[in-house]
Image 1 (cartoon, rainbow, N blue to C red):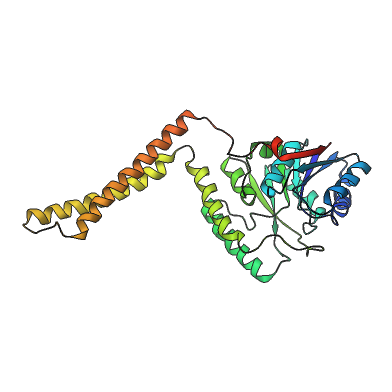
Image 2: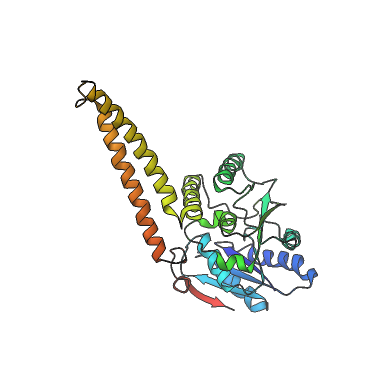
Length: 312
């Protein structure tokens, strides 16, 4: 079965239209499918529209969160309630084209675990396209996985991927990176992107600084979560060696009869050694923590505490 997870926030006018598009895309394939709509704290008539859709169909689930927790929490709730062997995610604003889903599924069958859409011809303002391109270029190089579009809402997953992901905060932007770090095979496919027919985007320029910090978090957790001494120990050793070289130089000057007590270089050498020891000690403490705690889910609130109502 195919599960389509749709995060919704104030998309009353697009809910039924999106379901019709999903029908047109998935019914011809002959595979059983379901739509899992997640109402992420909508304040308009979205939940009423979802209730009507649920009452009139047999393959729609509705998950209602108690308030707006963000897209990552909405996707996590949708993944938890999706029953399919294959999971599709698609935004509820109709900018993603549901007719691209069969192509994503076909790519998935080539042996990949996650296929991410790439909005090659993006229908957004120029400033947003430019910043998005710059961010994706930077993110792909820091994260070590070359993708043109990290945050495309249209993706296809094998269920194993969605079960292993621990989404919180705003980490939904880096789902391909999280999957790649866990060893899953990730591919990218150009998809059609359409202008937004109703409403306006709730994401502004302020998201890019936050996204960069999240990128650092993802990169650190992926590479050094189970070996923190490799990071902090390396930095500590480099700083300590630099301080040691400075202090050796100051010692030579002292033995040559020069006064060094008033020289700032002496203070710098001592500081580098002390800070280097602190970094190395931090790495050791990190190793002690990770050695006593096996793989655990990332810090997040219980999904049951977020969910207000489920229509299955």
